[in-house]
Image (tube, rainbow, N blue to C red):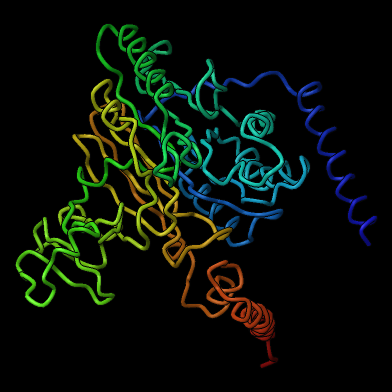
Length: 442
């Protein structure tokens, strides 16, 4: 049995290698990869976060992505990291098959694609980011630009979007950052952050673009996987501060000043440092052991918080650099699968997008973000999240059970039960359709 499995893995790897080599040697002439505003002056970006699947793309993920692609017809797709799942890339062939599962959807529709890497893309997989990048480059639809100089990580670059009226004018710019994996810069632990040399590259590149544009910064939008910690305190407001062990020991818990301290159900005591009137436990986040809350003015029908934010515990100053050195309208991220919001930070929006797939944890709010830029007014943008529930009837028992069977958030028992329920409803619906086609003689 082991020999048979090894043979098929070797065969997949061999075929993938020939396919990759063939595309490089015998491929078509290099396609024009210039991004440009359409004749209507619009440029539409579709952001998909955290596909994070295994050997095969989940059927529900494929159906959702293709439905939004065909409905929105974007000018560019941006995959914001964790594009493939951790540990599934056991061979080169397995990784290439994994990437092809979704890249083929864009290739078939001739839709340009750019990517950034997430913390799981190269984690426990045999290929690092640079070698995975080579696979993406084998697709004609891929417009990402390999690193032009030595920097931390891999996949930090920019792509201009040219004017619809002037073929030579760079009207808009798109920034892409590798937000790294885990923190190795200090002893704080947690996730990594965009590092100093990447920020220096951004400042230098933005300055060159501004000079090229006659001294006026080109409006832009940025993408990466992990959110910046500046969202806490800049957009989220700290409302409860974590007390140190020394501070807790000095407190008289029997005579606690309730106007200054709050005791939670788990017994933890926090100092009140913000306006409690805006507290809503549906929109609060624990970060660095302090509790932050989203102010109500940032909450709309596309806003939800399903998990504590996975930001780095430190900052190299990326968010401030984006604001101070350029004209960045927004920074769009993924990583936190069940969070969704748009919040300002010093005039730049921090745009959190939920997972748009079923390859990892999530809930009924899986969604794909659409960002539209209008050349007539580059000082702003429009954005909307298209949720799975907007396109598919999640109350339908067949769809509901397909979600349970596909979701890694379901228990094994729930998945098995849902698998049999899916079969039952497929058969029932097929019979119902068959019966409806029968025409009884009058």
